[in-house]
Amino acid sequence: MSQSQEAVIRAAELIERQNRSAGQHALPVGVLTPLTLPGDPVAGELCVRGAVLGARYAAEHGLGPGVRLFLANDQVGADLEHMSRTAVGGLAKLAFIDRVSALIGQWHLRTTPSVAAMAEEIGLPTFVENGHNTVNLGRRHIFRTYFSIADRAPLMAGFIRERGWKRIALVAADTVFGQMLADTLEQTLHKTVEGVEVLRIDFAQDGVSDLDAQLGEVAAFAPDLLLNAAVVRTNYMVIASAVATGVLPGVPMMACFPFPMRSQDYWGLAGEAGAGVVWPATRFSPDWPGLAPVGRWFVDRYESEFGSAPPDNALNAFTDVVVLAQAAAKAASTGRADLQQALEEGTFETWRGPVSFRWTEDTGHHDTPEIVLMHYRHTGDSAQDAVVVWPPESVTGDYLDPSTGVTR
Image 1 (tube, rainbow, N blue to C red):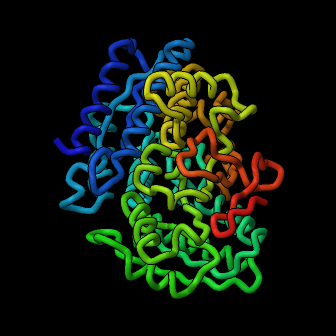
Image 2 (cartoon, rainbow, N blue to C red):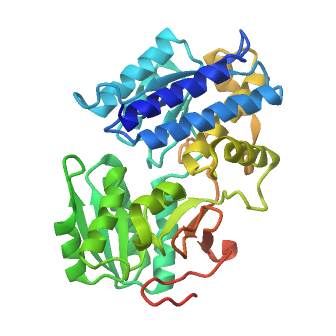
């Protein structure tokens, strides 16, 4: 049995077990997320974990009628046709067969625009768990509690300017996420860092077995910083080829999305060369003093059940289900229209305090969390060991430069 098949089974079992205690009139919530290749089944399984804990929190705290979850793997058939087509097929199953009142779990930028367009057309409240810059703009039925690429780029560029790095190697996959990320970062760097030189190398995500040639170009460029804008399996391929070509461990590396938060996977695949990495993330951590009671409950339950600190993927799905449960408690019914109205009018308790979704043309329905740059200083650090190194008002520890071994 493949790892992807095992992920599907584990996810389905988690949801089935949780649904046994759901009441007859529980709010039906769809989880449309990747559970097999070519998507990221690890991310999808983490989303399912978060959704299940969200439903459990709602049940234990008497939030409205509770939550019943319906699962769809948005990668079924994606090896034969475009990922977005299979994702919309999963949406159709959840919306018209399972009759869900809301949707969560969209993680890939390649699938989210198509899913969002269909959800808007049929009036299905949908929460997006990824960093697409504009997917919610102009769409009243799309909600977000996570930050976008456009939100994170100025933060990353500010830290680069502060460190005095001028020669930046930007290695990006040719996926929607990789290209949107690279385009946004490149534009922001040129606006923020005076005299910056950017060596941008794009590569084909599908079918690539190593990136030695691309990282050989990076080595010849002799950068001050390596920006890793690869995705899923290729983010670790960048690290492996950077080691093979001598770029790592000497050159500082910044990951462009929070995959280092999965610390067990990260150190198992990156090894010692992963020390010193910096990445953008929410202010969330198990030890953060600002963690609200709902966040404390989530951390304790996740660590008890899964044996590790919860990463962003699980946190976001948990947050969205808990918000939906609170909206259902305020709504006249669990129907889509009444739930939509409750989401637009209400304020909801989350791990970071209250959130609300006041509509604006510039942001859509988006309550953005505080974003920081996290940093592993030593090989084997856990997510709890990571320190915040930017912005200045949020710093919890010094940056340890892997090229010099000096903290500042």
